Amino acid sequence: MLGGERFLELACVRRAKHGQSVSGDVHVARRLPEEGRLVAVLSDGLGSGIKANVLATLTATMAGRFAAAGHDPERSAAAIMRTLPVCSRRGIGYATFTILEAHDHGACRLWWMGNPAPLVRGAAGARLLTGELIADAGVPGRTLRSASVELAIDEDLVTVSDGVVHAGMGSDALPLGWGEEGVRDALAARTANSAAGLAESIVAEALRLEAGATRDDASCMVCRLRHPRHLLVVTGPPYDRDEDAAFARRVADFTGTVVVCGGTTAAVIARQLDRQLELLPQAGAAAVPPASRMAGCALVTEGAVTLEHLRRLLGETSGGRGGRDAAAALRRILLDHDTIHFLVGSALNPAHHDPRLPRAFDLRWQQVDHLRELLERRHCKRVNVERC
Image (cartoon, rainbow, N blue to C red; front, side):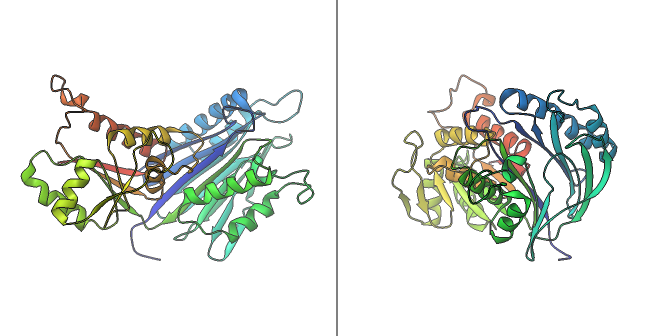
């Protein structure tokens, strides 16, 4: 497709080895909007647990900073490969990595050492990238390969760690594990509305093949080129009640998905637009207030408590999308969209604001600012905030 706005959606789902509290796979990403590019790294540390996480973090951070700073990725990747020490006992590198540099129009370059080969998934199916050999250190798992890909709209670039391709190893059905070809076939058969949904489905299948007890860290990173999905998040009514009608009209006229966070906010919109507001039964965690239903809105939630639970969910490193409560539902909606516009009302809620404190201490502003930072830094979304 030649015309239309485009967006690179990025998502990574990770699961730690069974019995470990932290994953030895590390994902680092950064969007550089002024340059029209996205940089992401998936690194797999040797072993599992804290030690593997530290090794992978050092590798991913170094690779991400080199790429973001504009250093030649090929030279940087080769330097990282030469720098990483080799385990004296096992004779393999202390960490593997895949570096992705993607441009907004869909041109992508990858460099990988030790990780399974990346895959491209589109309407015609999925294919493995063999790439070009760039460097060979003469040690198992220490060859650096590179590939270039031009993504079309709704195509995915997929990278997994070896915990995914080795899933099911030793079983009667998969004595050698799922394998790269098994992952390829699974990708070709799947449909997902988002990169996050696709990544979650691949990791979930790896967990199923391992009977829920993974013998290694399992991760899947997906980059999808698509026309952006726009989301409006409304929280807090306007400061001036005379603006209620115009405020509600902004919601009604928005082209995209709308969610409302806050009982008073929802009541103002329902009254101004003559819509019914219906409280739904409690679902999931009792600590999160139940959601409501209103025509024209994908979700209506309570305000401060739900947003605080949302902040914690967005900060989790595993990237899972489970949960039935309103905060989990809101998180799924946020991750399934690309450009997120917060419309934040300035009316003060006496339950959340001490008038003796400056505006900077207003809970709503703090929460939205934290959410914006998480969505931009951890989930690579485009976010803007408007106050009214």
